[in-house]
Image (spheres, one colour):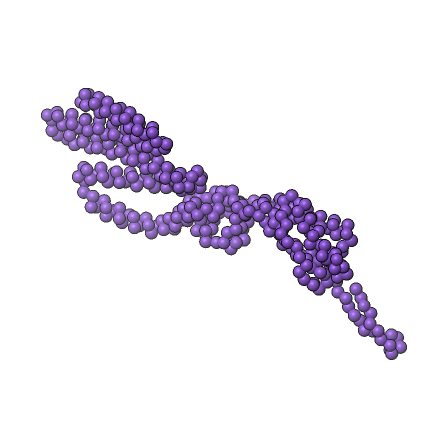
Length: 342
């Protein structure tokens, strides 16, 4: 038996060295990992085979044969299942890295799936081991089937939430740290953590909002973290006594003001409407940032510069006014006139 174990050890070392020589020529490290994992599994497996052969060579029959066979089979099954788990996880990790790169959110999917995959491999290994011992598996399959149906009914909602979690990680409508507006709920909040069953949001008021993945995924979401720019469109009016020459100059003034602000890109400015008490202009510009405070700073600077420019050019902003015409009669009751009130 000692000689057989030595031969197994020697052949394992030779095989490992030979395989490693070939895997060094590749750029990936996955094949190196698989070779080492296989070596760690196959050497104990063949060692168990040597032990069984040596035991069978002893002229003894009894319960000891069954115990040795069962123990060696159990050890072999455990070693092979562990190796299969390591190799499977490594292959999936390599596949994810090739597909999505170093995306942390996608690797969260693999992290969530690892326990399930390991459990499946362990169950499969256990069934194969019991079958090798001649254990009747008909009742076991029936029990597993009934248990699976019951578990499926009981875990229907958690399983649905889990798949919504997978959908969120794959589709990436938002990630941890993103600022969202949940349209149907009217919630403004920052994503703190995307969990398997629910997502935790921190609202602008400071409280923690917990929403199930399904309810969150089925609502209209506005993700302000990934927005590339903020668009500002608003109107201002000047008085009706403003001359046509000045009206022509106002769009140029607005362009100069917007272009003079660091975080603002001018788009357009036009005289668009004769208002009830003003000649209305529409100003449109973009702020290339998703930072709300920076956007407000830029908008404030544009507004202040516009007020200052109009003050220097003696252009008056219009404000709502109404002119009333009153008919009145003097004390004699004969003459009447019209008075205009501003």
